[in-house]
Figure 1: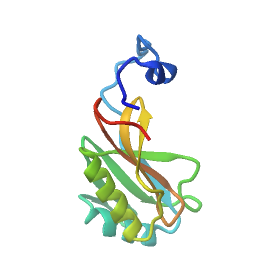
Figure 2: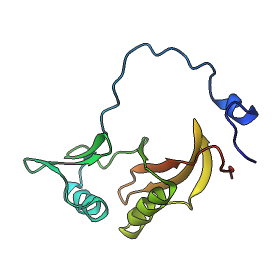
Figure 3: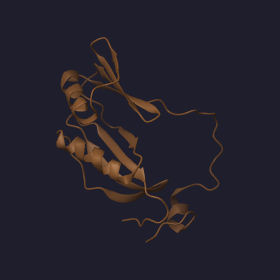
Length: 147
């Protein structure tokens, strides 16, 4: 089925008109992930994302991600769980490429699919080897069908 704004599927999920925001946000800051297995987590994320652009001491590393950032910190118990980090990519192809890089480095993930998340997106979920869920996705646009 083709997606069209304000069709039955869209309207069953998305409020229209959108509720008025209570605050004037500029953006959400980037996620900060605490890992007890910090050296292993850092090695994994460097394999996928390349060298971090930010380093503070021996327990903080970060990458610029679009207009935000992703930071890894040493500490905590285990790894982040019961949460999902969203990474919005420029194109569906880039979403699939990033998902493939996470899987090649030792992560796991389901096959990419087209879904509705406020808008039609290419949905490329992945879980790092430590159990942290990342949802990699990219907008599809109105002309794409949904799976």
